[in-house]
Image (cartoon, rainbow, N blue to C red; front, side, top):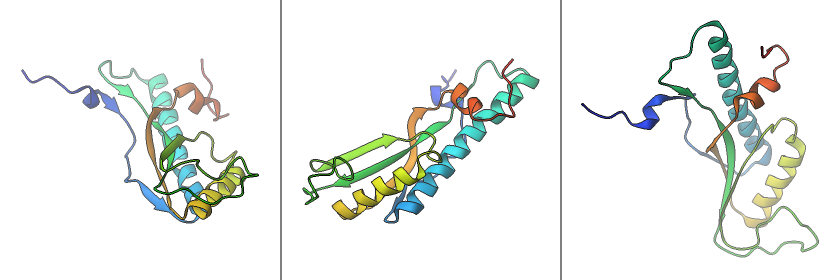
Length: 145
């Protein structure tokens, strides 16, 4: 008998290749699309589980979007700012929740990162799962019994 890999027991939305952006607004639009896709997937799975039993041997997962930047040099930035730059060469990443609520803030931050470091940002799905109650809470049309 061949053992089943744990990944095979996880249902998740279609994943897309990481994308690089030099336009902050386009990067934020991609963050919003990934977050919406993930939360909609979780909400649909939740609604199905209310109507019919979920498979006992599978888990449902969707993941926060992630923004990542890699720089190999120190940037000359306005030292009065506490944002829009990274302190040293390296790869930096963070997950983002509700990019729709933080759109203007994210565009400003990402725009400064791109400008100050001369590098694109990469947007992708992270490895951090979104809790289903976060997804359901943002949908007023869903009622949790």
